[in-house]
Length: 348
Image (cartoon, rainbow, N blue to C red):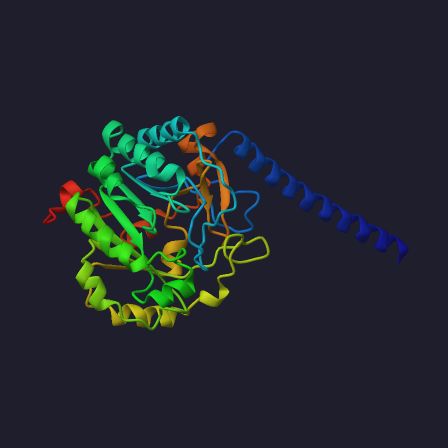
């Protein structure tokens, strides 16, 4: 009995050793691939899932959030003012040049509020550089509209293809409840004024709306038809850990979240609007190539924003592998469209 127990114990110990060896070899092989900078068919050691990292995708359309600072306090914001850092202009241009060389066709500048830094001059110079020097087919901006002056259009409007203004409600009280306001500024007055400037200075006008608890029952049909944007992007309120959810977050967006059914009911109510482009949480989460203020791609697959290394340090090809970008979903949600104003054939 004692002998058989010893033998059994030795066999069990041997199995444990073999299992541990397999695990060690697997981990060691993965680390070797990572340190070699290999992208294809590797598994990130900090991702507890079976999904593989993004193969070296072409950054056709990139969203550059060059600043996190904003003058509004939208309760559901998922890119909050966690830093005040902004790259020097020439470094930002160098990164944009790298993206162009890697295949970028469209750049979208966002924030934060992109017109806040240097009163829009920094943004204007980047817009001009991308259109005039890099000759990108499409240059666009997403803004809350509160800081835009007509002089900016006079100086830089010719280089801009699309200007998207965020507007979540056509009821000013609702905008105030959401936090899309600053002092006595009327958000809707700015929206209509900017729409006219876009027409005057030949910039395609777009509207972005986040559907949440406070506007889910609203009917915006009449106002959208009156403003007549080239696109109306309608987003379902999304939670991102560390941004608008969780202990480290600067916002608490749980009270803004709506169900998939509520979102669908909003879409059904506005189904007659041809320019409406809906984006549910599923479509939105991984279908954007997002660069933060350090020019790092942000991977949102785990419900938070995990940064890659900066493209300024490792180049686009190595950084984009860890972006979490879902190109199929990008195409499915209509991410590729007629995005150059020269091709839109708009009646100015």
